[in-house]
Amino acid sequence: MRISLIGMSHVGKTYWAKKLEEKGFIRFSCDDFIEEKLKAELAQSGYSGIEGVSKWMGQPYDFQYSGASKKYLELEILSLRNILSDIDNLNGQNVVIDTTGSVIHTGQEVMQNLARKTRILELDTPESVKQEMYKSYLINPKPVIWGDVYKKFDDESTEQALARCYPLLLDYRTRKYKKYAHVSLNYFLLRQKDFSTENFLNLLFSLEEKI
Image 1 (cartoon, rainbow, N blue to C red):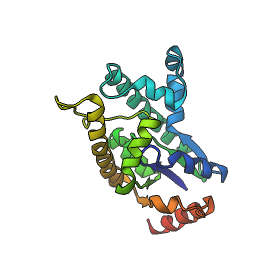
Image 2 (image 1 turned 120 degrees about the vertical axis):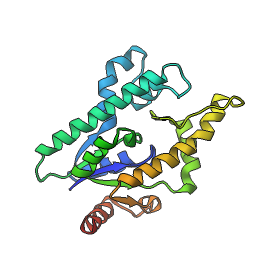
Image 3 (image 1 turned 60 degrees about the vertical axis):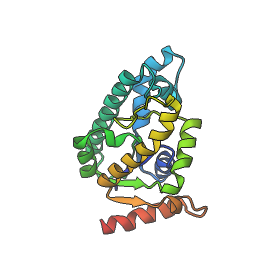
């Protein structure tokens, strides 16, 4: 089984990818690839890890954001192309690809190739938790590709514009995730206390039979 996990940041992609790795899946992480490629550049500013990547990129109103976000997206595309090439040599082995929340910005060619070589599973984000996601983003920011979504009005502060545009970004991404996903996994089901990795695997196998 070859699967790709897509969805918003903080929705649980890395958590479940690591759980599947414990069960014998070969895990590929786009975040890890990007961090490694940026390691030397991050170190120059005293940054490291995904938090360091977020600081390096900044917010869409920061002076460095345009160039940094472009480089980040180029690395994300490269990571997926490399991963999709690598899995061609893993005949018969279970694979899970832990994508970033920005995966839908990599373009139609990359996404179609991802859908052709793997089953794309969206970890759903219901409307009722999207406001909490913004709070999580402020507390623990991740690198975010905003595309054309962030637009500041003249009478707004940058923080006000960010708060207004973030839900728009989530709505845009949700539409794109659902466009490419083979199946969507229920947010609340995955968070039930008794929902184990075995339950997750059984769900995957049952869905595989239906796809």
